[in-house]
Length: 252
Image (cartoon, rainbow, N blue to C red; front, side, top):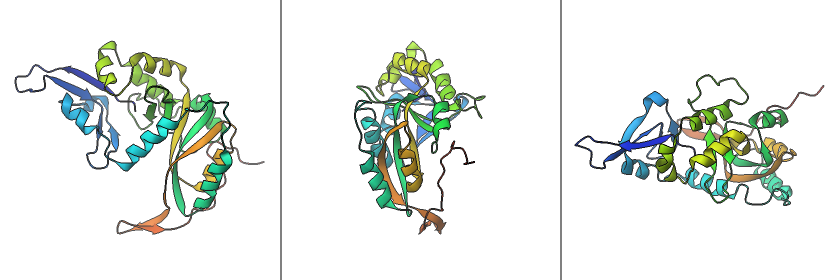
């Protein structure tokens, strides 16, 4: 997870920790969901309180950590049984939503992936977990205010964050297993190893799985498809007919 975090000395007499952290994210105490805020809205909190609040509380956080950890563990030349994954997607039918991590056969730029056909390309993994934590970036951030509309916006946004870091951030980054040198190398490369697709149509995921650039899909979880909600309750339904991915050209 990429986190903008700067821990500084706090010389105020009332400070018991002696250090505070200025951060541009917060995590909901109950759901575990991470929210990004604009740099000017950074919140100063005691370092110890910050580390406690970032403890994984949600089922989704645990599932994603496990899935991200498996990304890229096999060699790119190692054969993957796409048929087994396809069968799982087929069995789910059109009454389920499926969250997956798409593992690429080789690192690609976001623009390359967009040209090849994709689903919901706004949560990407810039570096897989090979001896170090994965570098995951949520595209709904505000570090690059003038990047909107660009097919490489999410990459430029990540680069904007990395460029704002300095060696003094090393201690803060190390709390999350991150190294500034690795982040800078990843930003310079500007390629992704995979991306997260949340609550997608199983039929479209089967189509995505057959793409040559996709090594495999890691299924995170399967939930009921809700056609609507009544008084907060899910009204089960079926996905409408769809057979085209984002970025695919219309026939003819």
